Structures are given as C-alpha cells and as structure tokens.
Image (cartoon, rainbow, N blue to C red; front, side):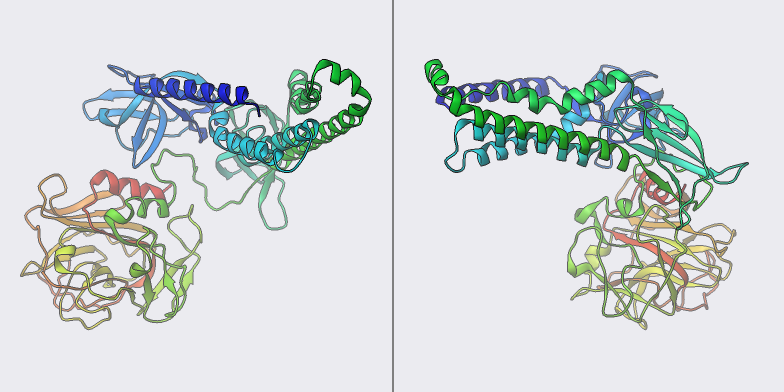
Length: 566
C-alpha cells in the first residue's frame, strides 16, 4: 500500500469517527432487530435509528431498556403507571409498563436489511484487514496479491453470511395439535431477507402465517422444510452479487507505467489468467454456498410438548436467564438443579460467582424429566426425598450478609406437611440449632415463609393447597429498607400472596443456605401458632433455586415467573 493510500485511509477513518461521535452525541442510537416480534414493521435484520422525543403516544415504535436488554416495540397506551408496549406479533402486551426514564428513544428511521450489515460490519472489517495483511506476506507480485485479497474477502463475506443467516430463515412462534387431519399447526414467521414457501404459503420478510404440518421424522418430530420463493429479479440480483469478485478481477492491472504494461503484456497474460480463474472459482463456490445455506438453514423441526403458544413478551425466555440476571452483584447463588448427580459432583453457580458458591448433594440425586421451565436445557429437575443440597463454600455466611435477601425456587409436590424447600441454618447439614429464613409446605398444603427475629414470624398463602402435583414458583423476600419491598413478603406464581411490613429482621447468626432440607422443629403452620410437626426435608421436584442478596421487587418476581410460565 502506498503512502498516499495510507494517508487517504487514515483521513477517511478520522472523518468516519468524527461523524459517529457527532451522531451519537446528538442522541441518536442504532439498533439491529434480532427477534421477530415486530413482524413486517421491523423484520429481523432491520436497522432502527432512534432519537429521544419530548412525548410519546400510542402507535409510536420505541426502543427501551429492561433488565439490561433493549427492546423495540410499539406503544399501545400511555398512562399514569407508564408506557404500555407490545410487539406486533406478540399475543399480549408486555407484562410491565415502561417508565419514561427507561425509554431510549422513538424510531425515526427503520431500514429493513441494514441491521444485518450493522451486525456483520465488525467481522467484515476484521476479516478484511486480516486478508489484506496476509496478502502482504512473502514476495508476491501485484496480481497474486489481488488474487488472495479478492478470494479472501469473498470467503469472509460468505462465512459471515452463513453465520448470521440473513438470506433465508424461519422461526416458529408457537404450535398446537391440528384440529383435523392430524399433525400440528405451526405459527411461523420469515426471519430472512428473501421470500420463502412454507408448505404452500409464500412469506415475505417479517410476514407470519399458520401452516399445517403432517410430515414426521423417525424421532417423532414434525418437520417443515421451507423453500426459497425468489422472484426472477431477486435471482438475478443474487447471481450478480456472487459475480462481484469476477467483475473486480477485470479492474486489476499489473503495476508499472503504461509503456511497461505494453511491453510486458505477453508475460502478464498468464498472471491475468490465473487471477480470472481464481475469481471465477471463488464466485462459483460462493454461489453454491449461498444455495446450500438457503436450503439447509431453511429447515425447521418442532416437537409437540404442550398446547400453549410460545409467542410472548417476556423479559426472560428461560429460567436460567432470569435467575442469573442480577449477576454476582445481587446473587449469592443460582442453581439449575439437575446438572449434578452425586455427592462428588457440583451444581454450577449460574450467576458467575465461581467455585466457592457451587452446591453439592449430601447424597446421590435422582433426576426427573418433569420440569417447570420447558424452554430451558437440560430438561430435568431433581427428585428430593430425604436429600439435602448444601451450598459448597469454605466458611459460613456472616449474619450481616444475610440480613437482606430473596429466596426463589420452582417446586412440584403432591405431599402436604412437606418440609423445607430452601432456607438458612447454622450447619450445612441437618440438625442445626439455629434455623430460619426458610420456605416450607405445611400440613394444609400452604406455602409458608418464616424468619426468627427473637420469635417465630410467618407469612403464608391462603388455605388453597399447593401440594397439587403442579409446578409453582415461589419467591420470599426480607429487607429493612424503606420502600415498596420493605418487610417480609411472599410471592407465589408471580403474585404477592402475603406480607408483614413490620417484620424487617431475622435471627443474627452465621450460617449456610440450603435447598431441600433443614430443621423445622418449633415452627408454625401458616400464620397460626399451631406447631409444625412434619419432616425437615422436602419431597417432590425442585428446579432453579436461587438466593439473592437484594430484595426482588414485585415486577422482578413477575418477570422471573413468566420466564417459566407459558
């Protein structure tokens, strides 16, 4: 590269950097749409440019932040509690209103397709620089260097395209058993740039439809393999794109003066021929790769697991994302439950606290395929029947570090008077002398949350039994901090069922958090003074247990519940 070329490249990069700084400092933001919730208004791969507005009204498309993620949805209402939003293809409004402070801006420009460029640009630039540097290695003439550059850049573009899948792709929003004719009905949406044929229905980018699928493979999965449905002009455009390296090859000339070029015309012809052959080969490879990628990634498989639609507007679509969302700053531990099997294996802390917060079983654990969080993997829970999961750390948790907390778990049981789901105790085994901050099931099937600030303090669900062999989500919080979450609070299935705002402390002692067992001697049934005489261990299945060092808000609890609930 000549000094002049280097200079112009540096000048161009500087101008681009200044333009980006001015653009961002003016309040503009760029976002690439990654999910199909906005349908044809902003298909997957759309570039959305937003800017803060003085006011927002129904119909506006806005980008807003929630739980460290950015969503782009349409406003359906503006009220005193905040802004209600909804994805155009979602079956319901977003579960929680959006506060004005969380709004990043209103969409001022929506450019379908350019989001793919935004997502791929860093990798294209990196790959382009690497190919350029590789072409400078060794003693090669001008023509050979350009053969490497054209071939390498084409390969970079092809690899990025195969990774991002911008051309032809499909996603499923939900499925149900077909009312007639067997099979299933799939609610699908085209998430690629080009139109496709889904079992006879032509779908453009962002367009959705319900299609009847009867083809089934040997594993019991209903499969649908959509085909490209390109118009003639689209096929021609795709072919021209694939032939760009060939066209570029005609622009390459041997280095030197015009006279030298004439004199060396005969000797340069073999080099030109190699360049042309290389470019043609690359163009053919790219064309074949594009076609294969179109067909291979167009296939889609789904298995009937339930009859409820999976389209939603949750902040978290898996329980693992929910329980790990606060990270190390707000989570003492979070376990999927089911990944470990024996006392020599460990449950990984999903929040990222490292090996010091791993959990281990006191006895070997049995797993169960019946699960609460059906979008998570692995698809298993743990059968608890006299088994105790203790947090594996070298020292006990200091009393001061357990003053404010939240407990969370998914549970399923058919047994009343059931024992402890999760709690705190002075030993990391059973038989401890101090024990509170726990959730258990009493003889009436009620969920009870208790602390001991010098005396037993419990809150509980109403008389409705939760020992019904159905999965339920429970969260218990305690904090002395003033505000909406102050005191002792119990949530079941996303709703606040009982609270005691004046109970703001628990017993002060160093101890261990445990899942599935712990002493309950002397504790009460529900809010009564009747003594609980049941077992100390839980019988049933548990999945996704977590202890937080903060008190979850009602909004956070509801979002965690919706991560596992359809």
